[in-house]
Length: 182
Image 1 (cartoon, one colour):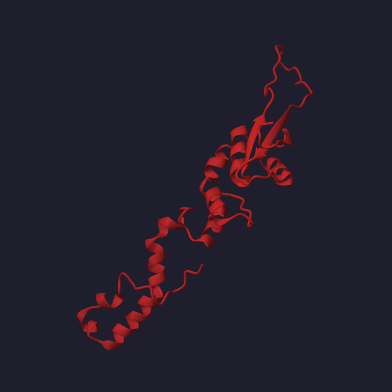
Image 2 (cartoon, rainbow, N blue to C red):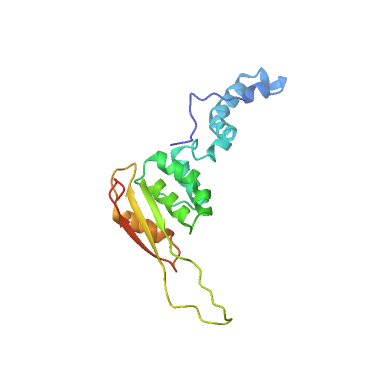
């Protein structure tokens, strides 16, 4: 989308009407300011609508990609435009939930259209004695996914997304289940 001057876009604030009386009657001054109006109308229209440029639902399509860089939202170019807009619009919420089971479920549902369940084991170890080394065990988080709005589960994409959002110290495995409630 281009935000260049549009010949059919009238200026809401024509410069010729703001000239002092000395220049208001001058034909050259009126034609000159009309040319400036044509150039500046796109700038003024953009400034008049500036808040809409920062709303992922209302911004021009090419601007959404730029907004995603502001909120650190990774967009897949293969995603349809409404999904890219929703990911950018929900980026702050998804960052707030990052590293949690709820965040993983929300990201899988939003980005891949799958229903997910995260099974997490006990997450704390403790000892009655101070300075005791922690047990050498690693709990495994199981992510179970079922087809959602897309109807199919692309296991490689699910694994890639789970690996991208799970904390490094957590071992995650992915189980793909059928849609009938296995």
